[in-house]
Amino acid sequence: MTNTGKLLEEMNDRSREVFRRVVEGYLESGVPVGSRSLTREMNEKVSAATIRNVMQDLEYLGLLAAPHVSAGRVPTEAGLRLFVDGLLEVGDPAEADRDAIESRLTENDADVSHILDRVGSALSGVTHGASLVLAPKHEAPLKHIEFVSLAPERALAVLVFADGHVENRFFQPPPGQTPSSYREAANFLNAFVAGHTLSELETVLKSEISKRRQELDSVARDLVESGAAFWENEGTVYERLIVRGRSNLLAGSAEEEELERIRELFDDLERKRDIAEFLELTDQGEGVRIFIGSENKLFSLSGSSLVVSPYMNADRKVIGAVGVIGPTRLNYGRIVPIVDYTAQMVGRLIADRGQQ
Image 1: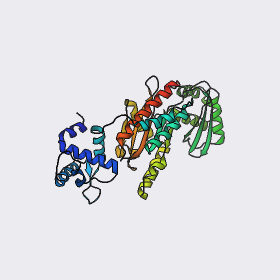
Image 2: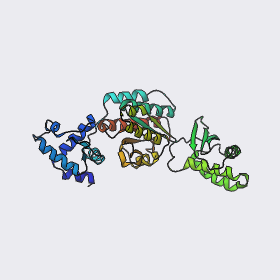
Image 3: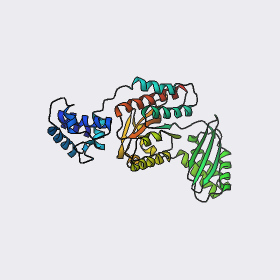
Image 4: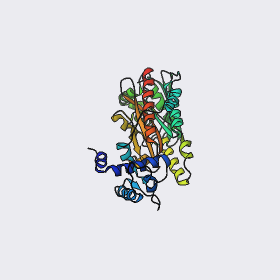
């Protein structure tokens, strides 16, 4: 039995009901829930004093906290995790939510990147949160590569695929690069890169660099090797991160400290810091995953939660993920089925277009 199941089993009916009503009340209102308001909602008639005693016990267990001097309580991160794992009731998405998502995703568009852009906008609009979409990597053969220096520690790889798809990927180049080393590295790659996918390129590069080491300046060789490592390195198996709805989170935050935490969160998201770490967890199986607050270091300072679900291709292989970011006070009962439904729709759309 899991720790969640054991703890819930050890709680009596009254404690479970008080805990559930405090969490649900907080998720709905965003304010601490007091014992007096619960006396009017409980299934059995109990006094406010009795409910306060139960709340104190739940606080001792680390499930509730009193943010102010008042008697009201809010769930802790541990309490939210217990609620989500053991008490959350999830049904089908509401018809209005389903219709809103379908209306954005059923447009006739063969370009998967356009579809995924609309997925982000649809999720953000329906949930009034920020959305996150992890796009599948592009596996068409390459046609051409260029390197562009943006700053001493920042460069751009422009990838042109045989099917006309173009990608721009940022990476940190080795030190000491010059305009001529960028040109030399690109010329070296373009001499044999045509017809190979990115997945094949790393193996080809190792062989070519070994055979033609004398033809490459050492600085340019470092750039070629660095670029290849960036493309195929662990955590970069997905080509693009789409984030929508920054204003939704900012709009609900009045205090300067809260605004700064949300800005930090989006700065991290846009740099893809630690994104792969928790989204790779979606590979462990189907279904929605929920990350609450400090359970993931990306959200430890921002006090945010992520509801995320993988989507699959026709071969049932996880190729990306969609999710919603919001405060820990998310309406999980509504958001979870929306994310799950959207992920299933995206998977079907991509499978229908024969994407890998």
